[in-house]
Length: 93
Image 1: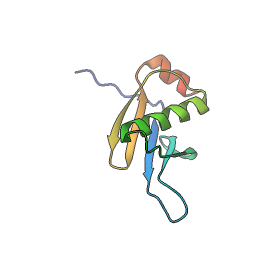
Image 2: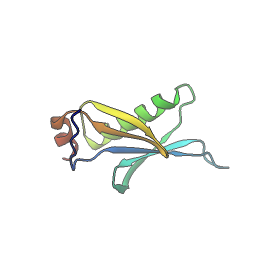
Image 3: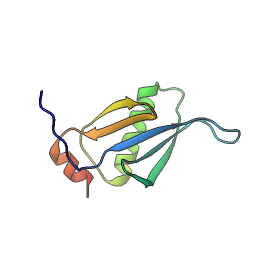
C-alpha cells in the first residue's frame, strides 16, 4: 500500500441541522480555513452522498479549482481531496 501526505488543501463539508427559520444545509469550506466557505441547501431529491458531492463540486467551481476528487464520510459530514497531484496544484492557486 502506498500512502503519501501533501500540504495541499481539501474540501470539508459539515452537515447543518434545520432551525426554526432555515432548512437543512451543508457548510462547505477549505480544510483548515473556516473563513472561506459556501452554504449549500440540502436537496431532498438527492441522497446523502450526492448532496455532499454536489456541494463540494460547487465549492471547487467557485474557487476556480478543477480535477478529480474522492470523498469520504467523517463524523461531521464529508471530506474531499483531489486524486492527482496536478489537480491539487491547481487547487492551491
